[in-house]
Amino acid sequence: MKDNISLVITSISAPNEILTSIAGQCKARGYQFIVIGDEPSPKDFEIDGCDFYSISDQLNTGFKFASECPTRHYARKNIGYLIAIQNGAKIIIETDDDNMPYESFWDLPERYNTEKVIEDSSWINLYRYFTDEKIWPRGYPLEEVSKELKPYDSLETKEVDCPIQQGLADANPDVDAIYRLVMPLPVMFRKDRRIVLSKGSWCPFNSQNTIWYPDAFPLLYLPSYCSFRMTDIWRSFIAQRIAHVNGWGVLFYEPTVTQDRNEHNLMRDFKDEVPGFLNNAKMCDELERLNLIPGVEKIGDNLRLCYEKFIEMNLVGESELGLLDAWLESVEEMLALRK
Image (cartoon, rainbow, N blue to C red; front, side, top):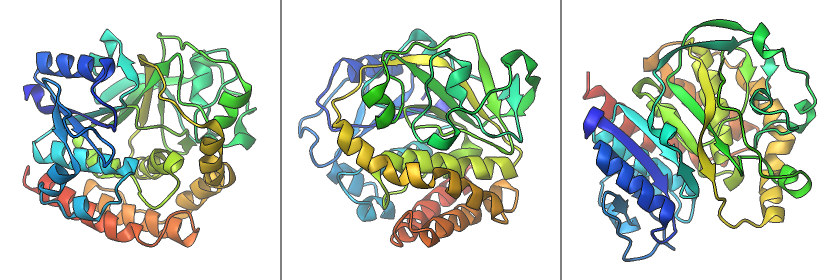
């Protein structure tokens, strides 16, 4: 693989225009394109330039996680991350099968960025720095939506280590069901800004247009025993808390995809998002109180402490710890072999 870059998607769709386009672009660049299927996936899925893994293929990887993770769940995407790490990926890109990349999608930001930085500011609705529309990202606490932002030009500029990076999506961005039910779409974001969230500042990020560098690979873990609509959002809160203790920032940058959203039942989405509406602000307060230890070698221990807290709060089921341990066992073993 050129530069050892992997792009990971999970999909139950037949080959479509977006998947075919991504496969072609990955093949041209020498990137590995991994698609993780599930039980409803077509049996004859095949696209040139794409490595498709059916359920049986996933089980044949030998990863303990693959046999223990529930099927018909977005968290099977974790298996794609494991495959990418096993193949030596130095960067993992993830997106979804309804996000069409712009050409700029393939121009990856560097890990170290000199950009506007926000720290020690609690909740920050990053979307509002990219548009004048009253909009907020999925997972953002509703009680914080009306919070005033500092003017963009007043933000301090400095260099920050950003091993996690979130690109935005135009047209049908990642908003919650309440927004979709009552507010207008499409929304197009401005393309001339980048912002880093640092220690003490929070904004949910998703799994739809995200870049990860190796030190942060263990934080890719998507929980299985929670609301489907919250799995990547709650992952983002844990990742941010552990990033804070390591002195890392999370880069939010201009839209590099446009979303042609797959069909959803919005009232079902709303129901699945209720645990987030009720708990997102509180869970981050609890994460702040945890006594986490800095250091890349402590990330596994810190992840476990975070999920133990989530179990204590009845946000995820107790079975999550077994899956997390299977994940960490594989990730830590593979990353150790690189040293």
